Length: 261
Ligand SMILES: CC(C)(COP(=O)(O)OP(=O)(O)OC[C@H]1O[C@@H](n2cnc3c(N)ncnc32)[C@H](O)[C@@H]1OP(=O)(O)O)[C@@H](O)C(=O)NCCC(=O)NCCS
Image (tube, rainbow, N blue to C red; front, side):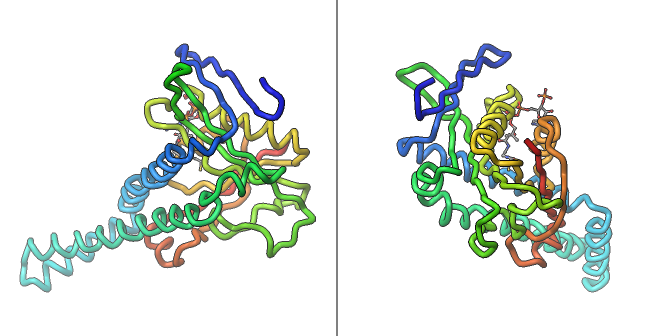
């Protein structure tokens, strides 16, 4: 470990050697790819989850039936109407995640150096694997620290509309964990847990009372990881920074997960 640069050497159960270190500008391309892929991968799970909800199954059947009747007993028109409904739901899911991704790209991710590394209460780390000649970034996590003295209006609302600084009981300064991502081939090897631990350690070092993050309902793997790491759900809302009708149709809710330190 060197002064000023955090290097966590992580030995995972499958003998995978990893280093968790601070973000460098040379990581930018791969970090952006990881980020975009991790947001877009939620679109299909969100779509299937939404379409299989009993309310939406009922609507799909009713719309198909209407198409069948209006088309004069036409199976083709029944299929067409049903497909149009599914297309609308897919569009909503796509817009919510794509909109979120574009917003983050144009805000905090536009300049990671300035927005995270140059601010004492913020941090951005990557997990690197491979040998010295050919290291490869396979995961990342970031924290934005919030001091209770900051004005409400100054707080970012990047995750979906509910500020992160005030807990249900209003206690203390907090860190908001964002961009927790592990590349597909390295998942289920405890790397996500190690990155979460890095974020928790950072908050402790900075004297922040808790770590919070907002997770959308289709991110079941993330919710499972967080619960295992001791996070509890303190809030649920459907304010996903998008048009509220998109969220309602897509049936996506946002869960606030918190861990007190
Ligand atoms: C969520 C994510 C970071 C997990 O990373 P990971 O390295 O696979 O997580 P870990 O190996 O540390 O998992 C720890 C525990 O979390 C749970 N978990 C993790 N992924 C899971 C999944 N897909 N389904 C169910 N449980 C899961 C398991 O209980 C797991 O323990 P186990 O493997 O002993 O059963 C990764 O799947 C990812 O990058 N997802 C896309 C981005 C995302 O959703 N980020 C969430 C923050 S907004």
